[in-house]
Amino acid sequence: MLAVVFLLAGCAPAGTSTPERSEPPDPGTFRTQLVEDVTAAGSAVHIDALQRIADANGGNRAAPGPGYDASVDYVAQVLRDAGFDVTTPSVQLEDTEGTVRNVVAQTRTGNAENVVLAGAHLDSVPEGPGANDNGSGVAALLEIAVRMGGSPQLPNPVRFGFWAAEEQNFEGSVGYVDSLSPEDRERLAVYLNVDMVASPNAGYFVQGGVGGDLAATGPPGSDVAGRVLAEELAAVGVAAERVEFDGGSDFASFLDAGIRTGGVLAGDEGRKTGEQAERWGGKPGVEFDPCYHAACDRAEAIDRTALDRFGDALAGTIVRFAESPRQ
Ligand code: PHE
Ligand code: ZN
Ligand code: ZN
Image (tube, rainbow, N blue to C red; front, side):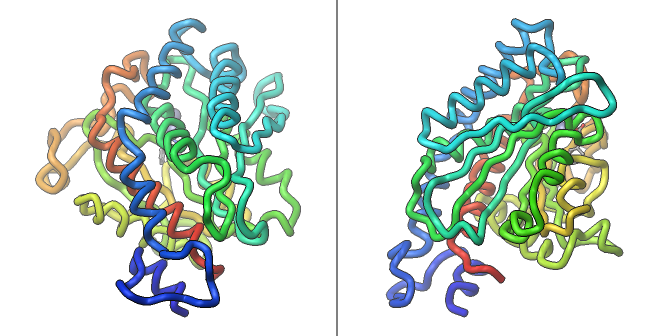
């Protein structure tokens, strides 16, 4: 019960202790430190690397293709250097000829029966380099993984997934979910989807637990994911807007499997309303990402403030789930 209160409150009340849980000694400390360590500058290093990969491979990182393969190699190497167990399981594409690889990395510590999974698609569209869509999501998760390290003192393992071919009916994440046994799926405490978190005219949207039916809200428990994400954005000074699951991203693969899911996004081709501009700043009446699926979705165009805030909020959320017993 106490641990559930920690999850909801995000930190331990001063002066309390939980004798039955020796790890972490002071819940909340790991979270505070990680949020401090995760920076936009750290994430931007990875966006810049992915931009260079696109520039060297015909201007995109589409899957299948050489820019995508180079992206897989880059992400796998960063994670190995950070001390993670890394695999690159293959997925056979159905719509296009070819095989593509996901990248999956997991910390070496914690109770394997209760795994926190965060994921971002690693491919771009053929039309552009995909710095925001979805270099930003990949970069935020890589920055979190690197700062966390492969053997954190956390009660639950953290798994990071980098999905192939989201831009082709989410085939990478569909293949990944299909590859999991019923027991493997049961071990997932939550899936957190990260797709476009540095849109040039950024919004702050959170998915999970909101909507009129199960397809919109996600399975039971998704409301907790949405609430914690919104709380962690509030902790960095942002009033998030909670929205339904729609528009399509890898979250669909997990929702379909009945896995509780949350998501964040800074917005794609939709336009920012006057009210949203008042709340978040930026330009009313303009697309969240004017370079959505275009050649100008480049590293120079991203919103570093949004990247910073989403990185911190994701770090805080991941740690809170990694410190929480199963609900
Ligand atoms: N998945 C869409 C794309 O990659 C955009 C999107 C992001 C939609 C996040 C919904 C949520 O183009
Ligand atoms: Zn896209
Ligand atoms: Zn995307």
